[in-house]
Image (tube, rainbow, N blue to C red; front, side, top):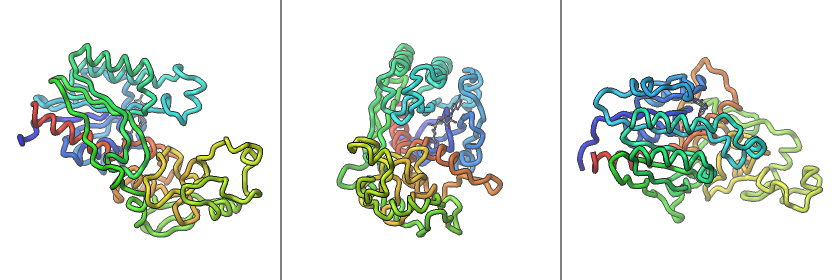
Amino acid sequence: MKNIPNHAVVDLFCGVGGLTHGLKQAGLNVVAGLDCDNDCRYAYEVNNKGAKFLNQDVANLTGSDLERLYPSDSVKILVGCAPCQPFSLYSSRYRKEGHKDNKWKLLYSFANLVEAIQPQVVSMENVPGLQKESVFTDFVNILEQNGYYVVYRVVFCPDYGAPQNRRRLVLLASRFGEIAFPEKTHSQGNYVTVRDAIGHFPKIADGETDVTDRLHHSCALSKLNKQRMAQSKPGGTWRDWDEHLRLKCHRASSGKTFPSVYGRMKWDEPSPTITTQFFGYGNGRFGHPEQDRAISIREGASLQTFPDDYKFLSEEQTFNRTKLGIHIGNAVPVVLGKAIGVAIKKYMQEIL
Ligand SMILES: C[S@@+](CC[C@H](N)C(=O)[O-])C[C@H]1O[C@@H](n2cnc3c(N)ncnc32)[C@H](O)[C@@H]1O
């Protein structure tokens, strides 16, 4: 196999670096990540040596600003996972306001940047719902009008080694003809499980923080929620609880309301999709499989396939659970980033 040509990757909307980290694990040279949330800087830079974090609104980025980030004569690779809130199934704001959300515009900014600098390879990742929206058709059309070969598909993350039932839309595009879609690395018989991902973390109680890792911290539960947790079965719902523990809306309903909240994960299957609120027992099926608590921030990161030693906070940064939940829950699973990186690397070795 040929060597990879001199290349450089820029990651738009880089967050704390899930996608970047996976691309680097695949052996790609990520030179910069851009994000408007400066709180991502520490995690992005400290875990991804050589990649510079730029605190930048992508909507205001010009083609020449972007061009300057690539060393001269390098094969240009542009990747990005625009904020997915407007398209997410979980976003009530999207359901209420639909297309009014300004963040829709960011995919057009992404497409305009592709048009301006004509990178050799482009990759975009987002929630599956995006596929049905005209902004996505426009994105694909702009790339095709600029001579790109485009391939996209909704992937099931366990097929790529994530211990999590997440589905994502992945797009790859190249200027030099066909680029192969990332190959699956796992199948149903050998999916990575919750046990594989978090079974090794020290036992903690609700409200407790592990002495060696302040991210291995689990939310304190109310007395009532502790009783509920104690009666929750792996893979079960609030229907497993005694009548008096049920919420008013559960008692009044005929069983239609929110069966997927207040659950416990199963050890030997992938977890539910890690959302930005995975640390709360009432926010999804995020109860630990056997300890009476919600999963910790570190365990959520692990289900997103960040390495156990991925640093999310500097010594000076305060622990902000909500913010960490957003940074981790919004990330591209590292293993999916790696699969995308492997596909790009193979393409460069074969074609360029
Ligand atoms: C889905 S997350 C990206 C996750 C990241 N790719 C990862 O794997 O960790 C989207 C990111 O877009 C950022 N963002 C939102 N609006 C932006 C804008 N106008 N310019 C730059 N970044 C923006 C958010 O701060 C968030 O970190």
